[in-house]
Length: 368
Image 1: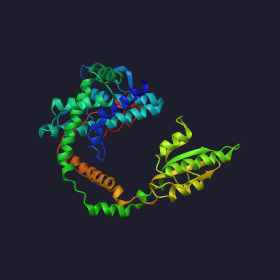
Image 2 (image 1 turned 180 degrees about the horizontal axis):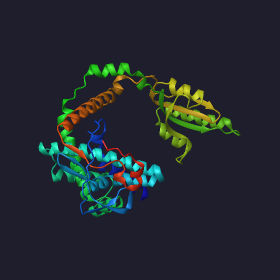
Image 3 (image 1 turned 90 degrees about the vertical axis):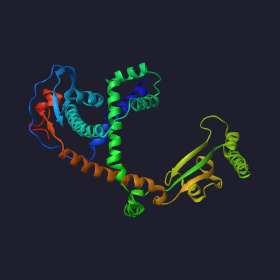
């Protein structure tokens, strides 16, 4: 149960921060503004740096006159903050909490900007689309009903409404980025081949072989019998009998009977075994091999000897890499332009997001 909850927590963190990932990489530094103290509202929320404390909510930033509140940052960052509290103590914990919270605030600003554009362009998902994404999340975590799902969310300090908002925002921003950026990116075949030629070191790999292997253990008292059994089995396989069937008949069905499928690299095996594994054609059966451990029958399933992966094998990975690089560059430029046309204000200094103890250790300069 603990392992399952851990996996679920990881999935929830991904959902909670997926929009942050969309906005965070390669984004420009926010414009510096002078912090302006605002009176707190009457609502009360838990303090992010100390779940036991309660603080008055307040507006910490404004994006085109739309407020971002302290409670929003604490709400979305709760899974990450909980993880930091589990893994760290003392000043290091305070530093990581402050860093995570500041990052999340900047992510929220970026996301709010993009969500505003998506809303204006009519790209918000329907309730059915959001529910479909939630159902997929439940399916991936083997959750069978809403009560179980709510209980798991509660154990992570989250609510179903929070997840709905996060997923709705992710879908809207994803559509916006697809139309504004992804649809305009072109990666040519010439670019792919030039990248491959210029980055050969990135595609170097060790020779590798996949083999079927049967070991007939050495018997110091009766070595001739072990060899005879191995030779008989080898003859049966060469005669057309299935490799696994021969192994089972010769060695028995018990675990550890000596029959296995192995993926091996040069240097992993004894020299005489390695010579057969890498010197035999794929699909062929090698000769009987003797070692200190006994007698070995080896059939090579696949062998890969090229020092550099062929272009055809890595083409898709190269395309994805170039595409992502272009996407990040264009997203950065697009967000910079979007920021330049927007009104963004931050009303809080470093350290103030996570309470007095961290604030005293943080910078007294205005947060950028």
